[in-house]
Amino acid sequence: MVDEMDLVSQLKEAAPLRPEAYERARTTLRAAMAGSGPARVPETAQEPGAARVRRQEFPRAGKRRRTLGGLGKVGIGAGIGAVAAAVAIVLVATSSPRSAAPAGSSTGASTGSAAQAPAVDSKLATLAADIKASGGSLPGDSSLVIVTQVIGGKLMQVYYGLYTDSGALYSGDDRKTLVTAVAKHENQAESVDTREVAAATYAATGDLATARKQMVNATPNDYFLSFAARKQIWDKNLPALLALLHAKGSKVIPTMPNGQALQDLINNSLWDNAVDALTWGAANPEIRAGVLRLLSTIPEVTVVKSTAGGQPALTLTAGPALNDGGSQVLTINAKTGMPITSVVKLPQVKTSVETYQVSRVTLADIEAGKF
Image (tube, rainbow, N blue to C red; front, side, top):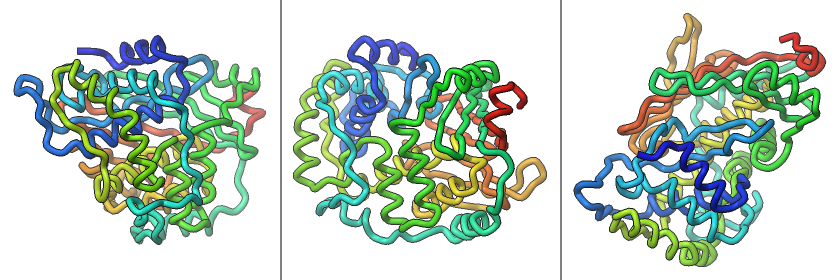
């Protein structure tokens, strides 16, 4: 068994680590697993519900941490899902830099449906409209979200994320490190996080088809390129992918995903990135409304009324197509849209539970440690 932090160390040794580089690897990995068809894996190495590698920006000073979607430990010898993180090591080293397609770019024949006006879930769309209508003036000037993550019953991390109304992003592992980050002006307003928040903000009132592409493209990918362009990228990375799969004992012959498999990848990224934007700006009603409008367009997401802490809630479940045979359940307040909990369950993996504390604060109070 290889711990996810061991994989992080290998990635750091393979190449200077940048989120965009990891995202290129992630894109190819997801594509390989989604389009591989029946897996011919040795019987001793089969793994049901092979898990995609979810996005992670790895720990470094002053930078917020992300997890592998509750994956915990990954068995490197157990089929295509198990070698996924290791494949990233190869692809980070072999892939050439490539930026995400702009939100307004042509989708090409293989992804044309992505540009069509999406259907929406009425519960989420209605709540988003209510949030926008009741926004009004807000106390404070920043959104503070404290996320506590427990995996398999064990506390893994606590994350403090601060998004100011002026667009600055600060984070810490506790109150002290957040105060220090603000005092040192360690503004993280760049790259993936900024694009996710911007996409959510636009989605609050913007065209939903455009907003979907903008949120998906917050992380580099080739989803909206033409078939020919995607095939060229796929063919370039395939030798490295096959070599590593072979080295790990897998006989899977991956194929480039199209049709529904490609749509699942798009919706998976949409879900991941939109929920991530919520962990930055949940106390900002515009961001909440935008995220809910985006999530309302994912057919694989079901929404049911529930209760949480004695209060009316909505339970959003991202089904197996988006979670490798498992599920991610996001519970939000039915009146405000504030996130309450997120639970990720995957086959043969310890359950990850995140709880959210959301509040409006002032940057001055954060600097003074008064929160």
